[in-house]
Amino acid sequence: MTSHVFPRPFLFGTATASYQIEGAVAEDGRGPSIWDVFSHTPGRTNNGDTGDIACDHYHRYQEDIALMRDLGVDAYRLSIAWPRILPGGTGAVNPLGVAFYRTLLEGLRAAGIRPVVTLYHWDLPQALQDRGGWAERSTAEAFAHYAAVMATELGDLVDTWTTLNEPWCAAYLGHGSGVHAPGITDPALSVKVAHHLNLAHGLAVQAIRQVLPDARCSVTLNLQVARPEDPEDPADRAAARTVETIGNDVFLSPMLEGRLPEELVAATAPVTDWSFVAPGDLAEIHQPLDVLG
Image (cartoon, rainbow, N blue to C red):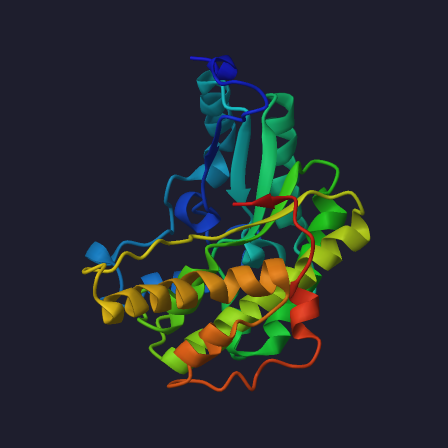
């Protein structure tokens, strides 16, 4: 199979997430993430499964590159494990973590595969969670520092930078329903976390472009369409619109338009007053993007 059956400039690609494939969770200086702690908590995952070994990509990445090359893949969207680079979330950079990703990216380039790098696919360093995690503005600032480190260390090898993968999951599943790490069930906090993820995105784009002025930047959102059970029922139509507002507009409007929709504020009024939004936040979040994933 080759990718040339696809009309250009279409790119045939594949994607993974660091915690889902790498394994080697305690090797070469990697610190624990919230998913390490969550998956090792009894009752949190099916069969008690963890990512301790996963696909063992950390040791078998050369085989994985060969598989992608044989498939005719043009691009590979991988995520970097923040705790492999900054085990404490901030502070000293782990050179062995940087070296792993540099070797991986060089291998992809040699195989003719464009690396699309996601900086956050949910595996927050546990050290930051211990200090409040995404409930704290400081985590967004730490993320911007991490993004700058990656742009500096790997910028010559990356085709496109994706700041966040599916922040809806990190905010609502991680902090609302609690079925994802860190397993918190607090509707008000989930909205605050969504805002801080937005802020992290905007600060990271700026940090990357300060190092790499011509960098291609993106974000990946899991957008949704809600359909009313009864299209003729005004209440059902309103409910569907509320789902889309809370699920989509909470990210799209700040990121792409630099605004907080009145409908969103009204829909979330029972749980939050948005007082955590500081002056200038929306301008920080609203950064030009090259790709919307």
